Image (cartoon, one colour):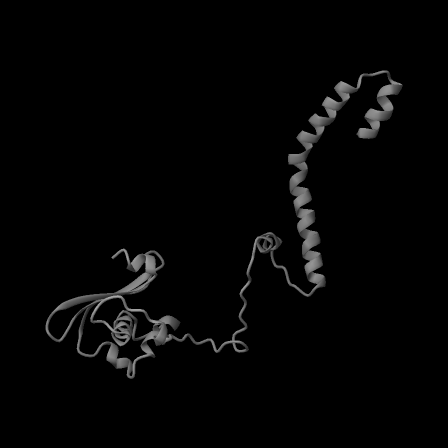
Length: 178
């Protein structure tokens, strides 16, 4: 197009200004139309280059998502880890007076399922000497299982003195709002 304006306009004795205006209209109008094609070709080239380095790309949009990534954490279960969660009791911080880390573990175990446990419940209940200790000396009134909306579990129980208590375990932003 630029060659046409430079070569053809002097031959036909036309002014440059209308030609440049037409060129700008075509460029501005053509960019949005060509953008999806250009992006698809760019992603395909990126996917091809990644495949040459041994990467398997299932979605081309994954390349775009990875471009904005600063840190990639990866885990090969069985090689780097044992696929078993653990809780380090030394890292438990207690801010309430009269409560120790063992009591926090016991309350967390009470707020966990004792049957059909998920990995988190199994790790917490596994910290007790005896898993039955989680429900020993209490009468369960109501257990609220984990759900993605509440992001927490809760157990309402009556202790050996007849007092009703409720313990909850879950996402910090949900538990601190209780």
